[in-house]
Length: 427
Image 1 (tube, rainbow, N blue to C red):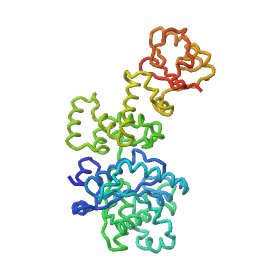
Image 2: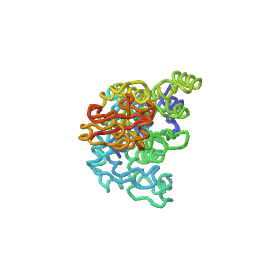
Image 3: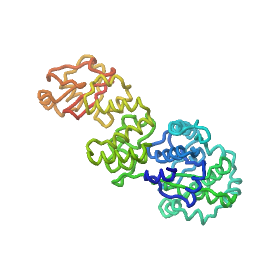
Image 4: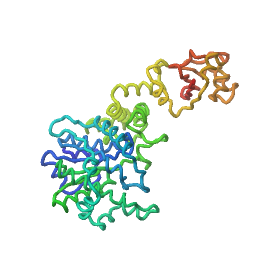
């Protein structure tokens, strides 16, 4: 199965320039996708393009990942209703290094002829003067051509308009393609479907400046079946950086995918082959409650992004909250991981000094915190065996807790019923 066929059955392909598949089938080709370093981490919204480069390399082609040190200073207007804040050079450099490190987890940079390569467009733009740019680039692309692009028309029709900086973005990206075509034999640029206008500006520039031939391919923009934006949760974007989104939260994001979305995502975001996926789909349709697609999806992506050890820890975290793993598991986690595990759970702070002297359990749960609205409610639940501290049922309403109850010297875990957790932090 060739590269285009692979993207097609996986439901990833959106638009392809005529002649592209034929060119790719002639032998190893070089191609690239650009990543703007607007943050010091990529997020799951970037995964479609990362997977595209992975499939490109697996098909025997040579992938280039362009990290936009220069274009990150300008800001791509595609799909945006307002201009982005421009970043300082120091912030951009920090982001570049972080993004580079993440991309090395996915692509093979030591596979011989088709080894992946990382390039930064700041390297060829840093000494490019404005006069050189308008002479060598600007004269080849007409304003009429640029104005016809959807990304430009939509902004001009809106209330905010478009700055000259953003208007020139397609020329900058077009020159990227030209530079990589000229110096690295990159014959194809790929990207999300919102990038089509910018990509074909590059193919047009190559044609007009050097009478060269280049190709373009775009992938589907990923959406949820209900129409809401993919990659967003109540707490914001789902990042690939463990400091921004913990491996447990990352795993849960994929595990909680709906049945309809899981069928699309397992094709797009994993490397399982067609026979395996179709067998799982049949098994899932016969017994949806087993959530076989969600589990396979979450496992594959979590291991690829965070590694086997973090995946195993995410599984144990789930079993701790919803299964039978004991409180001792929390001793394997650092403070940040404990807080991530209980993110979204009501949490309370109490005085460490006060806890040293011991606090009656009804005071702890209904006065120092509001786990229960009143001491009476707390006593009633305790008497019925429905309240626990550190996964041990509270014996009586007269029990007293002190610092010996702290997990890792800092946390107390309270349960009201089986599924309602509360986190108490002693400070």
